[in-house]
Image 1 (tube, rainbow, N blue to C red):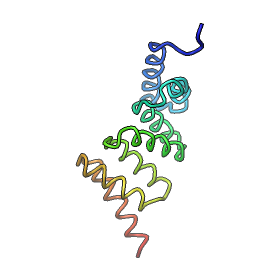
Image 2 (image 1 turned 45 degrees about the horizontal axis):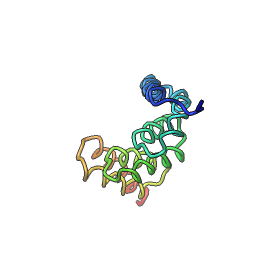
Image 3 (image 1 turned 180 degrees about the vertical axis):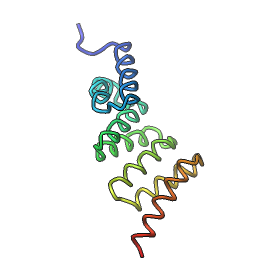
Image 4 (image 1 turned 60 degrees about the horizontal axis):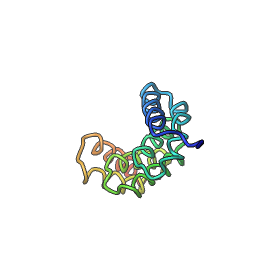
Length: 129
């Protein structure tokens, strides 16, 4: 008998983590995701959800690592670039944030991406005066 969770258990845990994150319970979401991350190390959606939970729980370095993993697996994921940019911004790493937010905006010109890019550029301009 294997100690590895069945695929349907992993899906249930992933869905539970999504609901917990939607309920603003990121630490509980991370608990629910633990086995999923361990058993699906190359699934970008798993790392994206983990990154969001880390971000929402202010574990910014872990969020950064998770979003970078998503981009390693899928460089075209514009939302992961946006989320990485916001994570870098919260860490005060504004020039690195601009780079990610520019790419996200170029890939998909959503208003929230454009607004985030403008906000970071404004902060950079403020600090350079």
